[in-house]
Each structure stands twice: as C-alpha cells, then as structure tokens.
Image 1: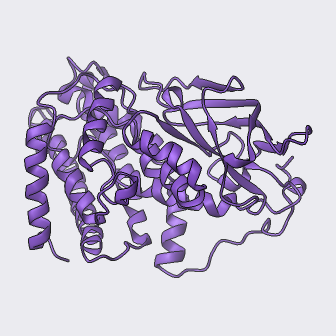
Image 2: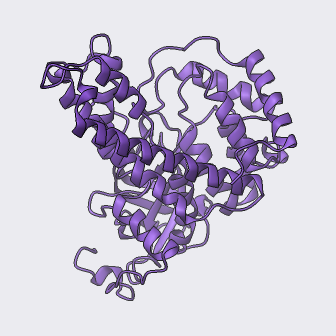
Image 3: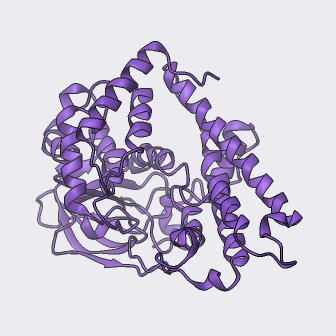
Length: 409
C-alpha cells in the first residue's frame, strides 16, 4: 500500500487545487435536504461549471465531456472538492449509476440525447429497482412491461417501485421490468429508460422519521415506452442491472456522519453517572477504542482501493466490507451518543442539540444505510463467496418459471 501521490498524481492534485480555489463556492449555499434535493439552483450552477472544465466526470471519454482520466484522478478531485463548501449533489445517482448504464447498453442516438444534459446538470436521473414485495431481491420484480396490442412495438409498463431516491425531482429514470413470466426470475427481466414526467408516472414521497422525504414510492399506470427505450437486450435486464448495482455499491460504500472523534469530544463535556466526565467511564472508553480501530481499518481498506486505482487495477469485492462496517458503526455510535447525552438526547433541533444534532441524524439515517446499495446480508454473501471462497447459498428457485413461484404473478 502506498500512501503518497506519485509525481504525476501530485501535479494533478496541484492543478485541481488551483482550479477549485479559483472557482469553488466560498460559502455554503444554504441547507440541503439530506438527499441532494436542496439548494437545487446552486447545485446545477456548480455542476455546469465543473462540466465546462471537464471535472464533472473525469474518467469519462473526452467525446462525452470527460477528461479520459484515471479513477485515481477522480478520487483526487473528490478529496480536494470536499474541502470546499460545495452545494448538494442531486446528480450522483444519475451520473454514477444510471447514465453509465445507458452509455454501456443504449444506442448512439440515446447516448447523444442524454449524456450531455445529465453531465451539465440540466437533467436528473433516478434508479427504479426496488419493489415492496421483492425486498432485497431485485430479480423478484413484478412491475410488468407488455407489448402494446396496437402493433406499434411499444411497451406498456404497470406496477410499483419503492425507496427511489430523488424521484421527486428527477426527469428520467431507468426501470427494471418483468417481460417474460415463463422464464426464471433472473432471465425474464428487461431494462427501459422512461420520462418521469409521463402522466402515468406518480411519485409519492415517503415521510421519514428524520423529517425528510428523500425516498419515494413510484407508481406506473399504463406508461407507454418505445422499443427504442430498451436499455440492453430483451430479457437480459438482470445482466444490465448488475452494472448499475455495482456502481451503486461503490457510490454508497462509505458512511458519513459524526464519528469517534466527535463522540470523544462530546464525552469530555458530558457528566457521567459518577459525576465525572463521561470520557472517564471504562465501558464507554472500550467502545470508543473499538470505533477507532474500525475507522482505521476502513481508512486503510479505502487506501488499498486507492492504491489499486493508482496502479490502473480494478478494486476487488472486498470493498463491500466498507458499508457493512461503517453503517453498523454509525448506528451503534449514534445510539450510544444519544443515551450519553441524557436529557439532551431527546433534542434534535440543530440549533440546540450538541454537534448540531449530528448524533440524532446518525441514529435516524443508519438503518436506511444498512439497506441502500445492498443489505448487510447481501454484502456478507458477496464477501463470503467472492472473497473467502465459501460455497454459495442454495437456490431452489433457480430454474423455476417466475409465474410458478409462490410470490410470482
């Protein structure tokens, strides 16, 4: 593992710092909603400025508005950008997951129509995979796409998706639909792109316990899409969706929020059960030590990934451990902090609560993080099978037609 920039990386970092110093916002644009939807005008303006300079998606080919750069250059830019008070990023899902899928599988006309506007922040995309009855099993999708009976070749989509981040402000989306119920569940899916402003698309925000509404239910009622809106081959939607899912798990692989150092600082100023500062409590100090060790392990795992990127290598599936550890740590740390704060633990007002209610935010956000981008159980299976080489789970439904499954229809 190499912690230092190569001479080329150091030169690129200096270039990025100079550009950000000259162009990045000098102060925060205001309060973001936690899901990328707040401060939209400022977000669009910053995205357009990055796109003009080639920094919006550094690894994309120059013909599509990128720099044709390396993944480590993207990492360097992200590290330096994080040092500035930039606005929220409602384009992350589109540019990190949806549009790359379109670029890989769609026809040239579709790519020319959508890549540029998405890169410049003019259009926003969402990912429509999860369903109420499918849980973590994307392949159990029941949303149907059937051929229109007028001979046009169009498809009619009907069904429901859930937990769709950013659907309330998205212009387009990629959706996985059941197109062949006679095939096993992984082999009868097809992906399409669709217009989120279509009259047959209804978006209902889900009110979260945090007070936000970043996730949504999305209902499709006879939404007509053209055959040209198919992303990838017919009935090969599972293979196409894997590209999107791997990008998603990379995007949400880490957690943000109050960490061990913020907890330690808070514990110095809170009275414990014996009248001394809470930081003197031995049980609390043991937890603090565990969180520190976990954080260091995550940091060096990320460094391993960065080293692989710097060498032009592809990081392996072991990066899946990042979200498992960080999400659990966020939940445990947040719960412990709220209990430690005693009567102040019930105050979640950012103006009154310690650390501007950061611990409360962690408590409410962590359960969702343990689901987003693959549940703990799915990621543990990935690590078990692809890192440790353990045998895979037994699948009794592997060769069963979807219509014959107990939950299929």
